[in-house]
Length: 88
Image 1: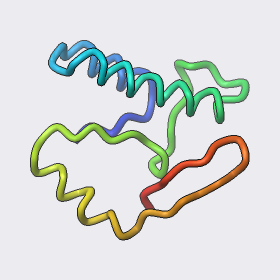
Image 2: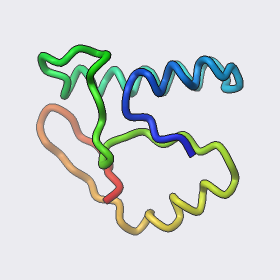
Image 3: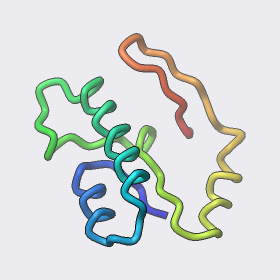
Image 4: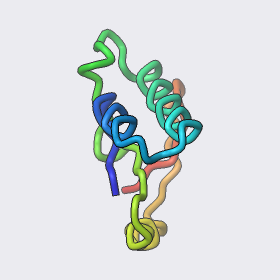
């Protein structure tokens, strides 16, 4: 499992060249949406998602157990600028 918290994590996935481009574009688009909503005056390079709001890329079949173990802890958070689901 790869936890995506910064633009460098996305660049690392691109460098692997093992993930379909449309999927990578979707991840990057979601990250940029978070950046626009929460980045304020921070540069894209230094912007980092917290553990509570990162993007998970599941790489192995066993990674799904992580989600299965956390699924009952999902909470919907609405804060005006963005609405999202979070794993607590």
